[in-house]
Image (cartoon, rainbow, N blue to C red; front, side, top):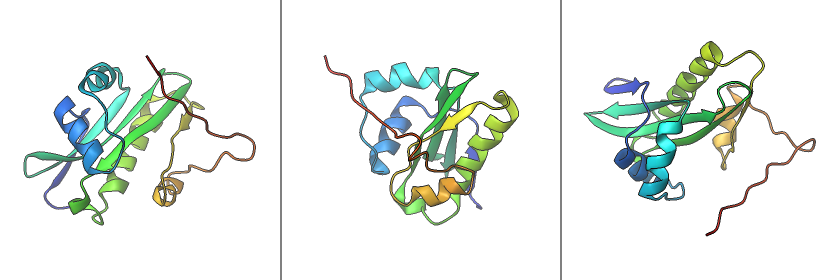
Length: 137
């Protein structure tokens, strides 16, 4: 991974908004980013040539439950092991700092399930099923 640095920081608002769209994730508003990012439990940012090109975060209560979110990488940098590096950095932090037995979850889109399986994640069905909704005003 020459030329890439995995930095243990939460991405800034501009980088966060840009990377979500570049990676094909749903766009978020500036308001959402400004509120949400400071409430991250931890995060990593991938830097290449002085620019953020990837990221990942962990959110949660700090004790019982954590969720890995916002794994995003600019498409031009795919295939270089950076997704694995992001996951490894987040899992290292969880294993070092989260209480033993804490529940760690994520939502795997498409083939990303193969990456996450390498870090011990398994489908929870049929015992459980993931559910989601969006808020409305």
